[in-house]
Length: 234
Image (cartoon, rainbow, N blue to C red; front, top):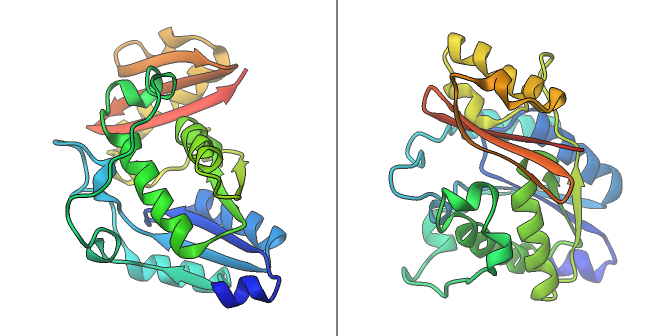
């Protein structure tokens, strides 16, 4: 990417874990509209999954993803192996401040966001983007990565784009593929509860958290063993 930068072109990065859907494609479209060169990374990052989480079950379909990116006319796909990203085993560890970790997903997923910032730091150093694109659905992740960019002076402009939803309001997510038909019906209640500001709509479901942070109402629910997150700006 150094030559691209030397040519004065703007580089946009859309980091993903693959299993692409319309939400990802909306980020790509935004990047293409704002940047000269768009890079999409696909890497299922092991360091952001804890023991007993769904790393092995996380959906992977590289060939389908590749075709979607080709149709979207993405300039570059970065698809590294685990060994390329983490070649030496033990690594420098990031320690995040408590005010980023005492809410939301961080409370029940210790080490998750440390893994997120570790891989993001590597991607930023490798690709050297001018802009990076994240979805509002992963609100806490976006807040933490924005802090990483600021604290380490990456000089990257972060773009947080609106959540893309199914017709019934369910936030698009790669993990939705793991829902049964019955589970999928239950999942549509998540957005209804958020819209109504009424958690009782979810009575009977395994609600991990329902909380407000900085004017954003956030939720995590487990359905069919699949962990789903969503939020709305109040």
